[in-house]
Length: 198
Image (cartoon, rainbow, N blue to C red):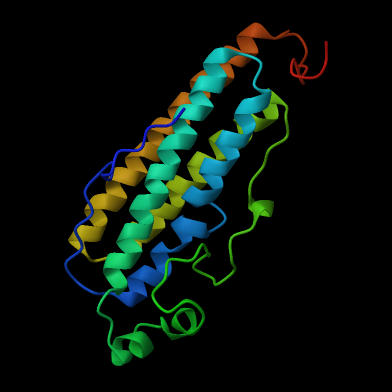
């Protein structure tokens, strides 16, 4: 079902070590609005989508999010390779280092580890697609916040690419929600769940 190409969707070539920036960017790896949760959310939601177009949309975007997870992991790795003890301490990366050394661990910038509780899968196409729109918007805001805090042009180049993909995903989920509503009883404000209600 999936074909893995051994290259990133967008090149990541970070020249400078920066553990302080890595400690922020890790949130897009395993934070509440990060790529891990997004990929699992969409790849799980696709099973109850009643329309093949929406199953395809969730599969495509969920798979792309796995690629974005790989890109974020690569950024964090490149920002933390060759760290000195002084950089660990001065960069605020020491607490992370104690538990994970320089391994890439799914956690939020605040230090909370990734949890499936941060993703929503309801089995109702309107609820799930509305959640997906919100998820893409929240991820875009997180990327905006990273750009506000980063002064590394190598990092910013990749983050801008990832941010642009969040905007595209938001638009695609909006199209999917319109498609779903067009196929449902539009006079019913709450619609019904064609995956369950017959």
